Length: 331
Ligand code: SF4
Image 1 (cartoon, rainbow, N blue to C red):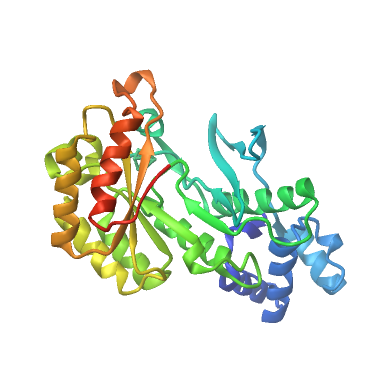
Image 2 (cartoon, protein in one colour):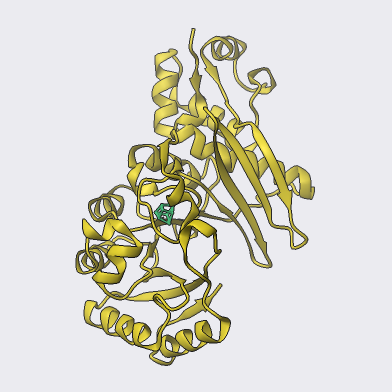
C-alpha cells in the first residue's frame, strides 16, 4: 500500500488527512509540530499521540527525507547539499550563515525550463517539478541537521530564499503549501518578510502569489530593455518588462515588504555598461516600482559564452544606481 508523505502537507492538508483517519484537528497540529519543530520521522517517538493513532500512521503515512548525495562545508560555514530526487536527478540547497541570520536557499524544480543564458541550470534543461514534500524536505532536513551540527536547541534557519534550481512560479501548486509550512507557527514560524520567492517574471503567477500567500518577492531582471532581456531571459518574450513591472506594482499592494528586489547578474560587455545603468534608472523611475537592486557576480561556465564583469565596472554600475537613491548591494 502506498503511504502519504507527511512533508507533502501544509497544516490544512494534514488536518484533512487526519480527518480521513477519523482524527480531530488538534491531532494534526500535534503531528505537524512533531515533524517540523522536532524533526521526528518515527511515529513511535511521538509519545503524546494516542497509541491507536501512532499505529494508524505506521501503516498509512511516512516522513520522507531526500537522500543526500554530497555535503560540502566551506570555511565560512556555508553548507551545500546535493539531494537525490530520483531518475538521475539532483537538486541543491545551500545554507548561508551570517551574523544576524541563517539563510537557506531552496530548489523548486529539477532543472528549469526558462533557459536563462547565464544559468547553468537553464542550460541543463527541465526534468520535472519537485513535489511539495521535496521542497519542504530541504528545509526539514537542513534545519534539524544544523541544530545537531551546531549544537543549538533553537531555530537555526531564519530566512528562506526560493532561489535554488528551478523557476518556483512554474511549480506553483507545489510551492504554495511548502511556503505555508515555512510560515506556520506550528512548523518553522518564519516571518513573511524572511521568505523570498525569486522569479524570472511569470506575470500571472506573481498576481496569484499576491492573493494566495504574499511573501517577499525578488525578480530576476538582468537587463534594462526588452531586446537584451529577450536574449538573456527568454521568458521575457512572453511577459515583457513593462508587463512585469506592472505586476510588481500590483504585488506591492500585498507584499510584506514595501519594495521588490531586482536581481541583476553582471555580464562582461553585455549588460554592465553605464548606459545600461542609466536605462535601468529610467525604467524603475517611470514604472514607480519601489525597489532595491542586488548585483550578482556571474559564475562563468563554458557553454554560456559569457564572462564575469570586472569588479571596477560592477562598482561603477552600483554607484550610478545608489547615487540616484536606489539601495544597491553587490553580492
Ligand atoms: Fe536558471 Fe532561474 Fe533562469 Fe531557471 S529561471 S534558467 S533557474 S536563472
